[in-house]
Image 1 (tube, rainbow, N blue to C red):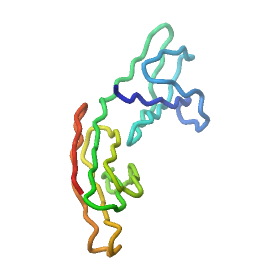
Image 2: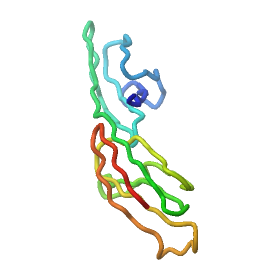
Image 3: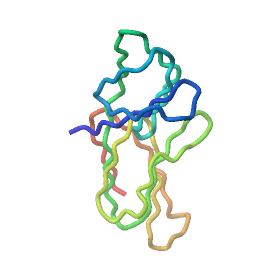
Length: 141
């Protein structure tokens, strides 16, 4: 089945964690503004979500997709994405010797892969990848 991540709930503008709520559940909160951090890969940050008295506020997120890596030889691999002007590391597979998967939010990513043999920088490859909701995207390294 689909991996459903939990959500960290904080009062708007505060660092202290008020609650870690499982997806697909409802809880009662005092009326007010809340910041949400949904623990997807990459995380989804929602600020100033208004909770009103006697109303249910539903947060919908895109269903993740699956990235499937198949290495032709052992190496190291990481997943990156562009966020504004910066590139952020979303996931580090570390050493990849066999098929591995990771659930990612839909979007454009890059897989950086370097075979173990030789360890030279020129053997490093950057592979662009598009992840689609509910689909598996396969890359052969």
